[in-house]
Image (cartoon, rainbow, N blue to C red; front, side, top):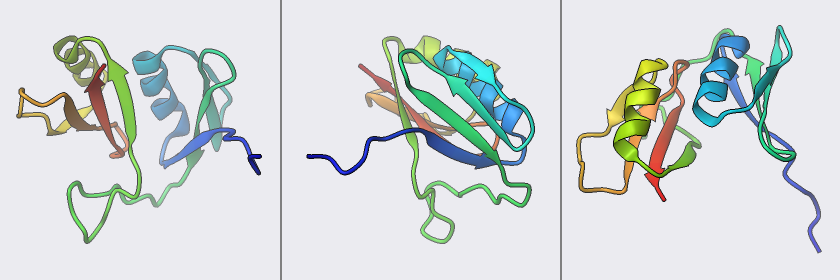
Length: 119
C-alpha cells in the first residue's frame, strides 16, 4: 500500500506567472493563480506549480558544481516540431545537437533543464 500520492511538482523561479505561461503553452492546460504561487492545471488532476524564489540561481547543465537536481521529461511525437515550438516560447538549447538521439535537452526561461523525448 502506498503511503502517499504525488500531488504536484513545484518549480522555484523568479516569476511564477511567466514560467507557468511558458509551461501552459508547452503542455496545454490553464494558468491559475497570481503572486508567489501559480499553477498550470493539466488534463485530469495533474498540476505543475511555480513558487516565487527571487534569489534562484539556475542550475548549470551538465555540471557537478551546480547540478540540476531534477528535470522534466516531456514526451513528444515530433522532436523537430516540438523543438521549434519551445524555442519560440523562450527555451534555450543545452544539448540538442545530436539529432540521432531520441531526446534533446533545453532550459526553460528560468533556467530549469527539461528534455523533449520522442515517444
